[in-house]
Length: 123
Image (cartoon, rainbow, N blue to C red; front, side, top):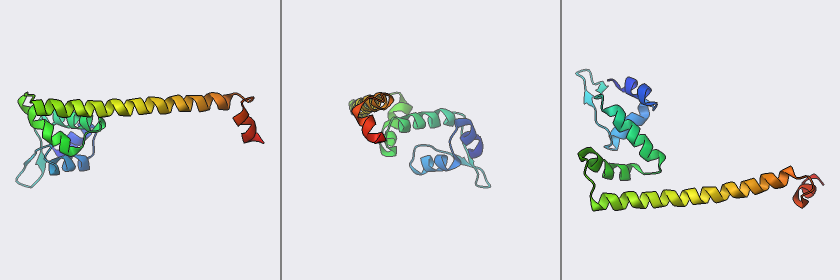
């Protein structure tokens, strides 16, 4: 499939696909006229890359992990790297939950017109 078709199907920009190629995350073939074409498996690869980016992994980390994914082999190093990334995400989740709790407290205080902070805001 051509780059535009892959981009549309995967829900990413053509620019993102070019970037993935520059980073070594995705490979394409070239037609005699120079157009990029991708095998049907490229859709799964792009979706995986997007999931890993959404999880906060860098392109460098993704590049290190893809050979293990491609071969279906997990090394102690890749397991350690993935565990470290999971721990990092857990810390982010904990921080986000604390922030949400603080916002809930502010919302509750703002909804109570008798709360001291609300009377200061209206004075």
